[in-house]
Length: 467
Ligand SMILES: [Ca+2]
Ligand SMILES: [Ca+2]
Ligand SMILES: [Ca+2]
Ligand SMILES: [Ca+2]
Ligand SMILES: [Zn+2]
Image 1 (cartoon, protein in one colour):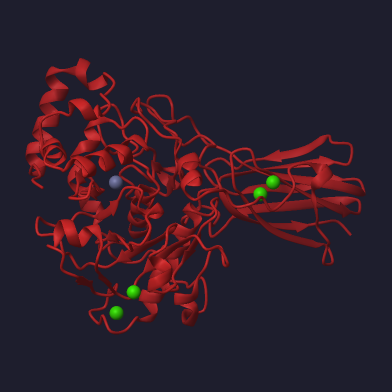
Image 2: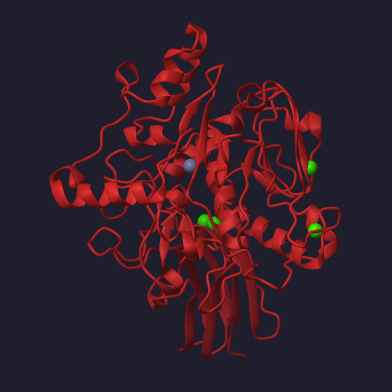
């Protein structure tokens, strides 16, 4: 697996910018398996036995139209298994910022003793297991294709030089990595967990292990992450994805979600000229797709290609994940006043929580108040007033009266939360409707923000009613 040194790649890119603007903006070609371009992938593919070749063809076909530049990071193994090796950093010059290894969060999300008992959908048999305490990989295509069949061991996740013990700050970091990955997969019928389901369970279909460890077992040098295409659906194999990175919790979680994305059959979210889109914007709403170069942006969402200069060949990513996971998480609150969830007041306070699970999900809540001023805050999970912290949901809140008239609408610009603040109302019954929204315009040049497509996730409601 040879890579161009970064400076050569930059020089080549600069030259193509100078001399061939036309090629730069032309749509990229898609992979034609019968007519592969000369190169490593073609060599690997053509040296396969017929059966393995058919398997590889099938796996690629299941992803739809793949851009040809994707072949850079794809390789095909002896049995026709297709692997992604993501050398994120060499693809982009923002590498210097990326090597931040200090956790961005210092507060735990759960008791430290529960760090290895976290579940985003307890009771669901479909599992994404984030494995931090070390793992021995054996009898998988990784062994067949990379270590001549030998088993190999990954050391535990470690940031303090003592791999035998998880310090408090390591536990906090693990919780935040889990929370971010859990948020990315929250709309689907899968349980993101830090608790080991056991060897037998992990070899079943619709179980996927992600090993977070710096132990590198690839001779040709370690990528940021590596994973097998579609391995979420594999039976009798526990072929993990690996995140080899030493970065902060945000970027580590980005690599984990990206590699898990490949196991559901996702390819990269690129542009006409680049395999990985590196995102746009600055501040709390700086955006990048999970399947792009997902480093150093606060908003990191699934996409269906709604951004400027997008490649012609893009997937509807959430539909793809949902189809592999055999489903979405069931909706928690009715979509209209008629099916609204009733909020009982505790004194003058109301509280609720829920999630926006699809683009069409509206969650409706009903409450009664006396005459006076009322306020309602809708806050995405673990997002602060000017922070994103792994949330994908940007919310809009609408207040209706009993007759269905809109009393107030709020969607705070440059932040994810919504606040209906001190609205004066007569006594009566009211409805609060919550939905996911976009921000800015990612389709123009220069692009800003995102569409509502990936705006999904958990929220809490805090209300202050009149007496
Ligand atoms: Ca383990
Ligand atoms: Ca340690
Ligand atoms: Ca919902
Ligand atoms: Ca709903
Ligand atoms: Zn990738």
